[in-house]
Image 1: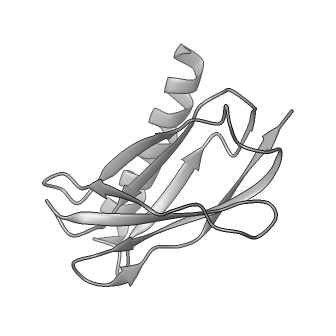
Image 2: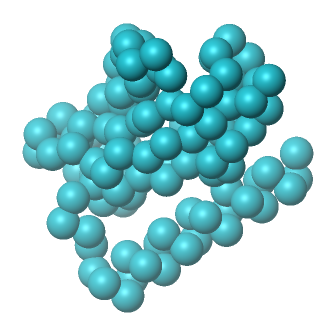
Length: 117
């Protein structure tokens, strides 16, 4: 557990560092950590560059190309959010995720993660 937390923390800090070096991103940006996990292990979705204190709609595409019902997350005062993806009930394979900033109607980058048996 502490190792996964450190992976997420390092990924998040790298993203924040990149933002500081380049200024606020033009569009919302997300990362997942780790990018591959065994079924049952958590994957953390982290986003930055969203409208502060508003909502984003998260989209998750299954390996077969169908989409789960979107989930709504609230951003903090810095326009950031974090969400633990529970992989217990997910099929094995590659998933695609992105978010839509509902206030600005701007989509984030699309990222992939893989769940293994």
